[in-house]
Length: 255
Image 1 (cartoon, rainbow, N blue to C red):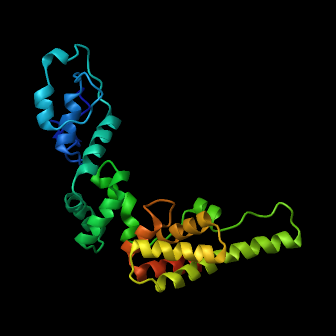
Image 2: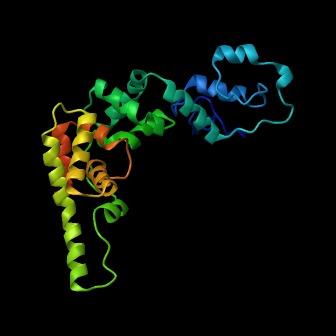
Image 3: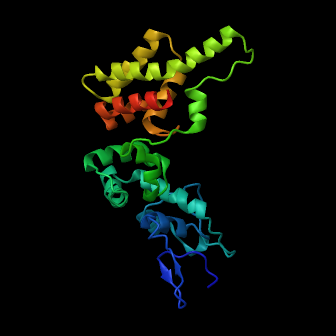
């Protein structure tokens, strides 16, 4: 009908359905905030307003005569600002139906902790699964680029016997390191992020390994991709048994 933006799901007389911003998960207050700034400005750089602030500040004198430009990406930005300010338990309740559709078992207390770690990375609740799925499902595949960068060793430029042996030895070390990290984590008590981080850093220091390479190999083992919050935070929420199992699985699968 010549109007590309629908606040609510709309069905045309011909039966065509257009999804609305409400159905896509936009927070009402965020959308009102956005709409208020289409053609109006408060005379300052402030963009985030409460409803009371908008009511007090809004005036027709500051409404522009020229047409307003709607920016879908800016709409996402507004929603992100409001989403990260929402209580974690409220976001967790909105995320629960997504988890149910995925058919995964979950505990709401754990979901709240997961939300707290990943909500800064999303604009919509529907995007949480993309950032947090590994907390509920063990990785079945491993990102090839990350494997190449942090698990394997590049082919030596000079193909002499010493260089080849060195490369093969380094490549073989990755699964060995993951198994040794798993052994170290099994001894951590109490099992919490701070203690896990100290254990991993202690192992790296004791064995003279490169911090970045080992930490990224651990992340690859736990997540399957180069994403997610801190490694120790992931370990805590996965639990000791699941963390150890994933490290050993990666060592066996990628070894």
